[in-house]
Image (cartoon, rainbow, N blue to C red; front, side):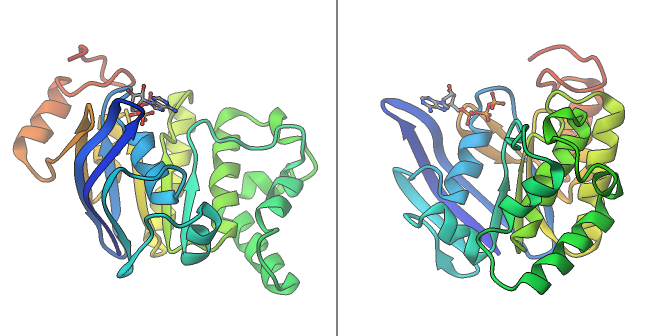
Length: 242
Ligand code: ATP
């Protein structure tokens, strides 16, 4: 479904991604782990059209999306849940969902989809009139995912869903991603939390200072995660920093 080949992204003179290639097949839940500043957010932004790569290909369902505007990419079926959630704190939960549906037509279909999303996140339906800024971090993350789902994506990009959340809230957010995956959603998630990401995903890539490696099903990866050697600052296993 998604094919990234030889991607290079520069911010001025700084190389954020160097020759990055990865693949996400339909129905897969794929993870990219890596430390702060490795280029994880840049990778997702490039796929979502927020940054233009210097070189390389990004193909979605056989069509190039490089150079397309972010809203056109959303219409093609790619939605991004950005790092830090970026919900509208002064708007209510219902209003946040309404803003998310503003690019769509067909009121009845939209309200059916909103209902479906609320079934997935029952906690949000109890807070529809609450300003989103008053929700807990975990609830805000659920709202951010709900908002992305309103666009009816075929591929969901999720940037550091565990960021700033207590472990119990991370559990809930990861359960939601697992549930979506079971329902057939294709997901690419980037995470610093290697242990959680490994448990959640079908395949895992490791990104370090702009370069990517597929360490999926490699016994070295399992060992590195379990021993705490592969620790990027926010795992639960208390391992040392590399
Ligand atoms: P984090 O977990 O901190 O978000 P990350 O793996 O998502 O890290 P990126 O945010 O993609 O990494 O950053 C990759 C590199 O690009 C870093 O060196 C960062 O400082 C740099 N960078 C990111 N955004 C910009 C920008 N707008 N201008 C200049 N450099 C940037």
